Length: 159
Image (cartoon, rainbow, N blue to C red; front, side):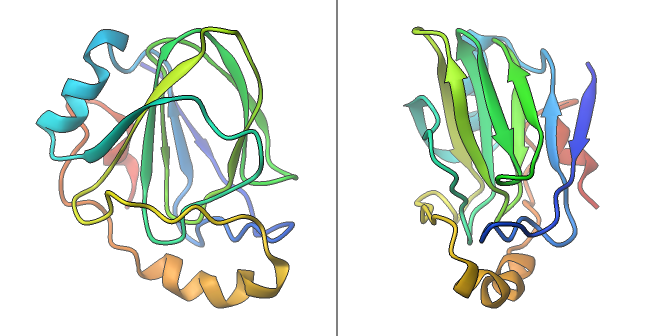
C-alpha cells in the first residue's frame, strides 16, 4: 500500500493543520469492509454518502474517508491544494482543519466517513479568512487519535 502525505499552508480561509499532513492511502481497505474496519477500531459517527462540493473543514475533528464505490477527484488543502484521484479502497485521513472538497465524481461515487472517539459529530466549517488565524490554535489542540484505524492504515504516520 502506498501512502501519500499532503501538506498545505493556510490559504483562502482554510487553516489546514499546522503540523500534520493529510494522508491518502491507495487500496488501504476492502470497500465492503470500510465501515466495519472503522467501527472495529473505535472510530464512530459513520455515514455513507459523497463529499461536499464546496471547500470545508472540521475544526475540532479528524476525519477518515474510505472510498466504497465509483471514483472522484478531490481537492485537499483548500483552493491552493492539490487535486487527487480516488477509487474504491482508497482511504484519506484528514487532520482537523484540513480543507477538502469534491471536484467531480462518477454517478456512483460514495465514501464512508468516520471520526475518532469524542469527535463523532463534527462541525462543518466553510472558509473564513477572518477566523482562520484564531482557529489555528484550537485545531492544533485536537489530540491525535488514541485508537488506530487498523493494521497498516495511514493514521500511524502522524507523529
